[in-house]
Image (cartoon, rainbow, N blue to C red; front, side):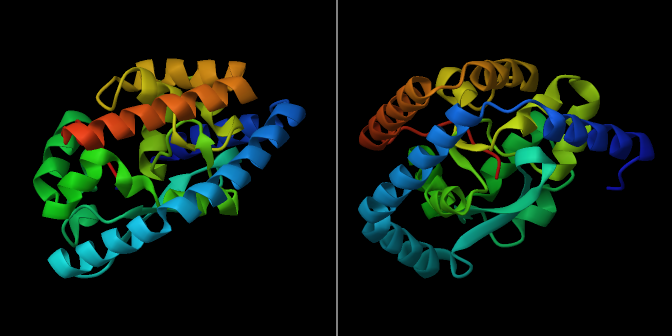
Length: 229
């Protein structure tokens, strides 16, 4: 899919506005310190389970173990996001043209056996702890978005550029409050609330809420609405 010139110009203006936006240096430095400290702790705790998950993926559906996808990060910079692979080989190319409910439906059909369980428990997200350590992401923030979707949403939602003021998050306000099938406009409203009100206290409360939900889902074995990689 080729990007129309006006779309490219609009997204570039969004990136420029995000990079020129005033910073909340003290809060963002504190959150970065927490990101590094907590992600190291989580990796120490999750190291063995991650090895078991990697082995299960290889044994049931082969390589690769990780899904690698380009995402738009802080200030509009692209980075490679890591997740445990939950879809069949080649799914990225087959799903590329779709968005919204059609993408959700087709993504569900592409899931592997292990992938269904990983998505239900959100354990497919664990490799993003490495993205947090590298500075690509935060533990809390707007969920990462593909470049092609950013181009589309930049045109539809004039305030969308503000998501680029902070790092994308492993979890976010929108996901904790409303789930994965909320409209993009509603998700943006929650993301903008996080960006405006972000603090150490709010960051920690969001992590605790996320942790409680993940534990609850793991215990119940409940299958969440399909997420999009």
